[in-house]
Length: 135
Figure 1: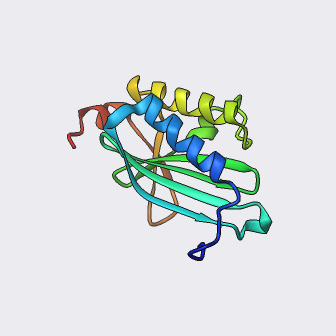
Figure 2: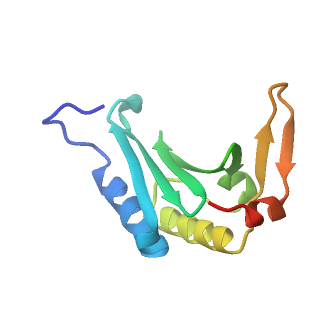
C-alpha cells in the first residue's frame, strides 16, 4: 500500500472507474473498500469492492488489465468469461463499456453464477434461485 506522501501512479483511472460506477449505478451502489498500490511491476494496482443490491462487485486492475467479479452469497460470476468480446485494457472506453454492460446484465438477470464444492466441483446456480432470493 501507499505511504502517506506517495501518489498513486494510476489515480486518473482509479478516479475515472469510481466516477463511471456512480454514473451507471447511481446512489444505490456503495464503495465498501478501496485498495491501491504502486508495486505491481511499476504499473500500479487497484481494487474497488462495491455492494449493489444483493451483489458484491469487485473491480480489480493490475498489469494493464482489469477484471470484474460479481459475488452472490457463496456463488461467483466472472464477467469477462461471459463477455469475451469485450476488451479489458486500461482505457477509459473499455472501462465505461464494461461497467455499462455489467449494469445491464445485473438489471436483466443475465449473469451466470457458479459455486465450487469442497471437492472442487463447479455447479451452475439457476437464475430463478438468485431472482427469488431476498436480501
